[in-house]
Image (cartoon, rainbow, N blue to C red; front, side):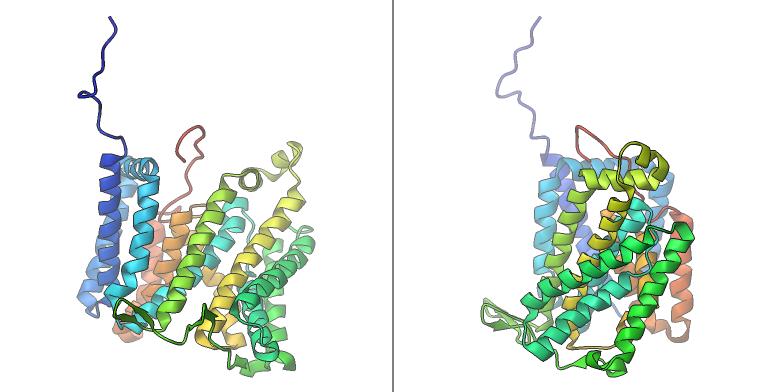
Length: 394
């Protein structure tokens, strides 16, 4: 017998319950982030880290919990994006005049872009690249030199830096295709060393003295050196760069998501799984590997340009080999080929050394202990890569 469904018996919208849960999770995360960033009490900092560790341990032992949360966010994706974006916009208003916290957020956002850039290679295609810091420096120096010597502003420098860094990405990628595995890593290390030595020794880059006097950007007549005035509320001048950095992070997330779910992302994953099998299936291994180098350099140049104009001064010490190692660590700790994990890894490994300054001489010891503990609790990263899902929410 056919069942008659009336209007009164219609079920509630499917997005309603997951949407509320997603909003609650994001609001809780924002509150914890605010407390973690603004608190100077070592007991509060330690307590929050311990609580986070126990939370990830619970997820590790009960995968069904993580799966359910992922399903909530997948079914209420629009709500998650809109509310998350709203939290990012209003967050500086809660911070107020605390410029130090704003600085941490800006640097964290830039490292998130760099980690997302490297994730295309290390996470998606399993290409070890230790030259992301060099691409970061190429972008910063290109835009800074154009601004100081030729009067080209931030926005023009942003485009120019991306083009120049992408070119060098191809320059690095093409010869790198003659090597594999550890030898490929050595080639990228050598490239980073060469770039660092060039900017440190040639005169037109300023040598070890760097480039100073980089002018502040402006948008629609508003200089980024001035505070933001909104409805009688004043935000520090750093908030200008915060919003630019957050916008670039958002753009990077969109690009990463689109690439991951495109033929390019599938090809990169095929290379990661089995390069020989991918070649037998007609995938141009050389082209997709070189493309990964170019995309990494393109995005790193954006972060480098923002950093150069934000601090107003850059030097070779800002773009050493250690920067590349740090970015790679962020990707591994966060979770390779997982967008959320990479961003979280970048944030944690940027903020933790600063928060541990309250422990003085034991700061680096605690920092290393936390990183080791993360990898012990979640050996595949805080948010490991997930199996692809077709015909539904991914």
